[in-house]
Length: 424
Ligand code: GDD
Ligand code: MN
Image 1 (cartoon, protein in one colour):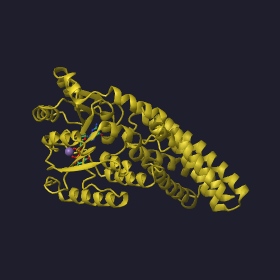
Image 2 (tube, helix red, strand yellow; image 1 turned 30 degrees about the vertical axis):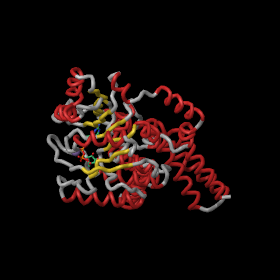
Image 3 (tube, protein in one colour; image 1 turned 180 degrees about the horizontal axis):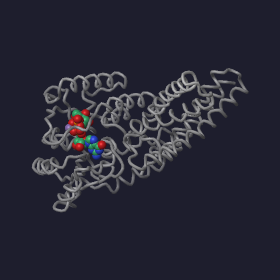
Image 4 (cartoon, helix red, strand yellow; image 1 turned 120 degrees about the horizontal axis):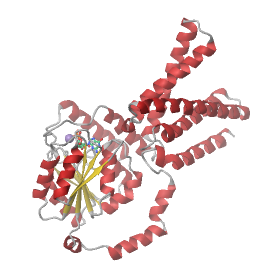
């Protein structure tokens, strides 16, 4: 009885998650629809048509179409982009290339500098994103905006060695590789410019990722790689737009089916500006490992949301204790105060952590907070309703309580993603 009920709850959660995924979750599908779409009859016809219309590389260069798109995510890199462009121009002389800068509306106006370059050279393109932040998401959008057979990802800050790009192209052209990784951790590569702490973290994370996700390449944390665009496009629906470990995500999602070759390079030091990676990236990283381990059932966002909910419970109890026991307030009032404070701290933490890539600012915070109160209020009703109905069927208090709490958190999560932190 109970297990049937639990199974149906999990089923409905999954259905729910798939339904809302595109709105509130960074990974768009863990459901089966997307995969069916890729391998179904329609996919086959498409592949056939692609073969017929696919121009050879010679035809590409004759038509002036790029063979390689270099995708460069940028945030506050105005002093670096022109230098990088010049270096690309020099090193890619024999290749038909373009560069796609994906800028998250940098306050320093990086996008404006890129526009200036693009007005003089049509090989330069700029995607300016509004209301969004995130390295992985920017890379994904950049590659998906390309129609070239090969796409590379590299940083704007000149830490990645662009002179490796022709070698990477050659490896893809020859068919020896579908993915070429610029690696700091193979013979000949290095990351000397890292300070001790960063080097330690990088190595620890690499070890953890390799062991838990059975990854074979030496540097899955590298931000410098080149991939066949058609292979990327197949994997794209499974990738997380949150966080910054896009290569790790790619390799883990491909489950060994991506032929990878690593080439050594030396990670240089930053020329201008500063690194955007803060201590939060550790959290993003653990979330990604967890998501891949659970086959995308648990997303990082959901996990963070649930964890914040847990802290809310503690806040609630503390306020209840202070109000009722210490200040002798009536129980109902102390309980209401506890709930209000807990909802408020939950909102602040979620805005800071769970949805930091879509953080509400200014007046939007107030509006968001009010909607969050309403969402949580209804969530509480759903929680109690489910708990009651379970208790009626099976009078086990903790099971009923747990089911109610689960219902509450799933509801709050789904509705917050739709109404509070909606994507602009
Ligand atoms: N669009 C966009 N949005 N770009 C971003 C964002 C963002 O939120 N955050 C960072 N970037 C851009 C930066 O402007 C830079 O071009 C690039 O992404 C890398 O960011 P850095 O802040 O320079 O990262 P890092 O040098 O500490 O780490 C890099 O190198 C490591 C080793 O290869 C990253 O590429 C890591 O992913 C990589 O592990
Ligand atoms: Mn950097």
